[in-house]
Each structure stands twice: as structure tokens, then as C-alpha cells.
Length: 300
Ligand SMILES: CC(C)(COP(=O)(O)OP(=O)(O)OC[C@H]1O[C@@H](n2cnc3c(N)ncnc32)[C@H](O)[C@@H]1O)[C@@H](O)C(=O)NCCC(=O)NCCS
Ligand SMILES: Nc1ncnc2c1ncn2[C@@H]1O[C@H](COP(=O)(O)OP(=O)(O)OP(=O)(O)O)[C@@H](O)[C@H]1O
Image (tube, rainbow, N blue to C red; front, side):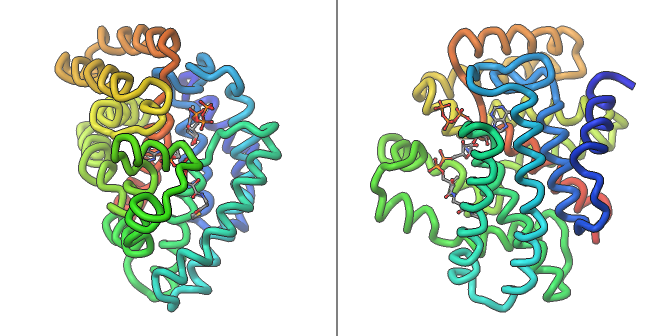
């Protein structure tokens, strides 16, 4: 077993050992464990280093996952209990849970933002699954994403186009560059995952590649095509373009199955650290890719 699978096995025992938790909550915790263990992830915190981050490391993510996993069941139960609410009311009701979960994250990490984007996404995904199950509707990647999209309908318009006080980084970047970030991705029903990373992950798996290799290839495609607001926040549009170009180059060279590309990923990590670039949005989408792949696998 290599370091990726070993570390995952350890963290599963430590952070995901409560079999009373519903399956979707256990899968969400597993997804975050896999994301933090996947290495090398250029610019991001992983098993090798803290990427372009000075305020957090691998252990900070372990503490963060431990804290926020306790909330996953609540998002799911909320989805069940509020299944018949209209979408606007459903979203309004899930947000306070998301905000409380964010506070638990900040407490566990000494006020560092490890999983703000992840909480937003997994809160919505788990709420959507709870709702679908309560309504006895099928849960697969497409139906779950359609639900999230319905729940978030109009969120870009109402929070970024209108009423935008430019308080958060995401709000500022919409004003400046028209990038819709985590909200846009959710409202689209995770279009970047459905159209880019999930098909790549599944194709790799179908060709017999292991989970680690398949996720690294999915990551390359996210780096190449995701409009990551974290990259723009740190390096402007040039920072985003730089990462996308580099990732496209590596894909053209055959992607992760080319041993040279694997080496180049380490160089790209060093380069992003030097440039203070971190694709935090793509990290969230890696976790979502694995999570949704589990729903396509078993077709619950
Ligand atoms: C919507 C949120 C993420 C607002 O954050 P902000 O305005 O700073 O938005 P921003 O676009 O910069 O995204 C924040 C995070 O999203 C992730 N992200 C960035 N780009 C992308 C992208 N293209 N796709 C997906 N995620 C992305 C990153 O992790 C980033 O740090 C969120 O913090 C929020 O509103 N939280 C309240 C709780 C809530 O509503 N929960 C809903 C259900 S749980
Ligand atoms: N493995 C990871 N490494 C780094 N960031 C990650 C990782 N996984 C997810 N992220 C996401 O990246 C975001 C953190 O990025 P960043 O530190 O650039 O944001 P910030 O705290 O808003 O800004 P800054 O630190 O520049 O003040 C989090 O919202 C988190 O969801």
C-alpha cells in the first residue's frame, strides 16, 4: 500500500468510524479525507507540504474534517425534514446550519479557512440527497446535481448581481471580473464536475486505473478548466490563466499516466508556491468528484 492509501486508512479510522452516521455523511467525510491526502496537488495543502499556505498544514485539515463531519448528518436530516419546502425556503433554512458549521471549522483551526467552500458544497449536496431520499426519488450524480441547482436557482442573481456589498472575496471578484465562484458552480448543478472531472475520473476507473491516479487526472482537468476564484483572489486573472495553461500542457503530454507528467506536477507545485497561487476551488471540486462518483457506482 502506498502513502496515499495508508494515510486514508488511518484517517478513516480516526475520523470516520461512527457507523451510526448516515451513508451520505460518511461518504462526504471520506471525500474530504481523500482530497487532503491526494498528493501532489500544486499550490494546495497535501501530504507533502502546505502548498502556498502559511497559516495551515495537513494537521489543520485533519482537525477541520473532524469538526465539520459532525455536521454532515444535520444537513442530510434537514433535507429530509424540509423535503416539501419550496427551493427558496429550503436554501434559507440550510444556510444557518452552514454558518454554524463554518464557526465549528474556525474554532477547530484557530480561525483558519480550511473548508469554507467545502462546507457550502457538501451542505447543499447532503441536503439535496436527504430531500431526494425523503421523496423516494433516485439518487445519482445527475439527480443530486439537479436538486442542488434547483435549490440554488437565482443565487448568483440575488447575491452577486444584486445586493452585492463586496464584503467577501467572492462578491468582490464578481464585481471586478464577473466570476461567480462557489455560488455559480452550485447553481449550475456542479457543471464543471459533471462535464469535466467526473467523466475523466470514471473513464480512468473504467480503464483500470486506481483511485489515486484517476483523481490526479481529474484534478489536472479541473486545474485546466475551472474558473477558480481562489486563484484570481491571489494572482488575478493572470494567475488563473497561468495555472490553466500549465495544466493544459500536462494534459497534452498524456496526463498523469506519463511518468514525466507526474514529475512535472512536483515542479508545478514548487512554481505555484513561489507565485503564492492556490487552487482552493478545484480542491473542493476534487472531493465532490469522488463523492458523486460513488453515487454513480452504486446507483442507490
Ligand atoms: C457561498 C460562500 C462559499 C461564500 O463565499 P465567498 O463569497 O467568499 O465566495 P467565493 O466565490 O470566493 O468562494 C469561497 C470558496 O469557494 C470555493 N471556490 C472558489 N472557486 C470555486 C469554483 N469555481 N467552484 C467551486 N468552488 C469554488 C473555494 O473553496 C473558495 O474559498 C459561503 O461562504 C457562504 O455563503 N456561506 C454561508 C453558509 C451557506 O450558505 N451554506 C449553504 C448551505 S450549507
Ligand atoms: N487541500 C487544500 N488546500 C488548500 N485549500 C483548500 C484545500 N481544500 C480546499 N481548500 C479551499 O481553499 C480555501 C482556502 O483558500 P485561501 O486560503 O486562498 O482562502 P482565504 O482564507 O479566503 O484567503 P487568504 O488565506 O489568502 O486570506 C478554502 O475555502 C477551502 O475550501
